[in-house]
Image 1 (cartoon, one colour):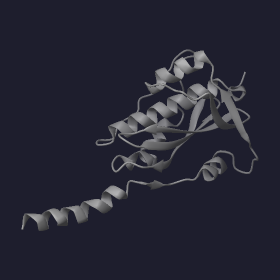
Image 2: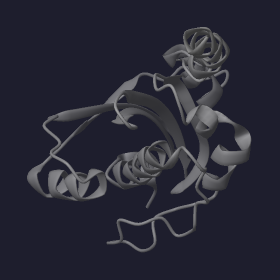
Image 3: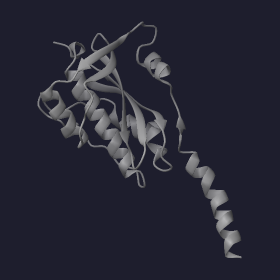
Image 4: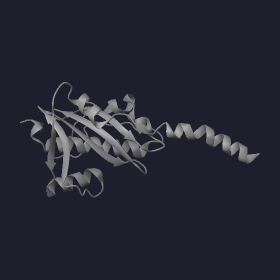
Length: 175
């Protein structure tokens, strides 16, 4: 009898866990949303030693990459980064306009829990946020967490902070 109950629980829980995972927006769809009706091309941010230190402070880990690809036009940039949630990478797109977050999107989510970070009730918290001051590596606002998604929330917060920092390093950050 206990094995039947266990099987029933697995049958009921498995679809809910896999419902968190998925590709929700492609790279091209994200670019189109960020720059509708505009032809933009990839830009490259070459990471120097000082920038690397700041990036590693934001992420809390080593950052071995020499360059970061992004799109930029006017005072707007769009970034796609990956960060580990609990065990697997989350692909996140961030649009920064005039030094503030304009949009945050989860492009692909691979974890079995915490996928709620992709919904507007959560991502809208980032809109309008910026880095505290010229040398600050912290957001200027508070982000409410989601029970059961703590590591995914942290990953998203790191990526938004990273995108804002990287935006400052580009010619699109304004005067």
